[in-house]
Length: 237
Image (cartoon, rainbow, N blue to C red):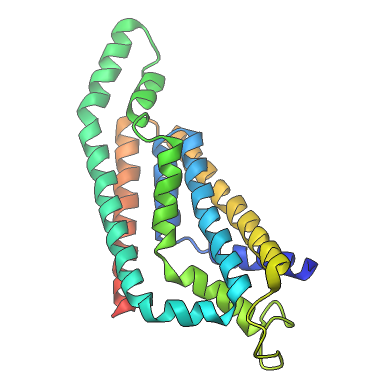
């Protein structure tokens, strides 16, 4: 059973390490919000990865057969959601410019630290709970994650006894304990990497803590997300 845990860790890193649209959105959001918000978003991504790995471990190739017919609609939905989030993030950052300038003036008049006051007022709109739910939703509509885990289980790439040409056709997955360990390993791997990305975004936000810096990171993140959404749409066609 230790092999299932190790396989989950390896598969989890294989899914999490490529920096795609969701990871880009996480870094951009963490740069504009407190650490707890970025960390909650990171754990939202990891939770979906862990659940998908658990399902793949339980049902193996059956997951692939279930998801493949709706893979294209899910990919299109994912791309549309990312475009909407990119637009909302960019618009919110753009609208925040006048309030940011005014807060700096007010802080200076009160003798307070304008950078601290500015950051708190602009970043207070998104809570950790909402960030967690948002990233769960964005990650859940991506069919590639569950398909990858299902291929790992059914194809026997990391678990030779779970699938592959030499395995029994009647064995659809890893069993309850094996699937739980596989899912736990994937969650740990994904959470560790997503938290690193969130921390990087937080540190970036501290370096670029001024109004122009936050606006630049928001627009850059939105632009990259739209570009990656376009790639997803091309892949669905």
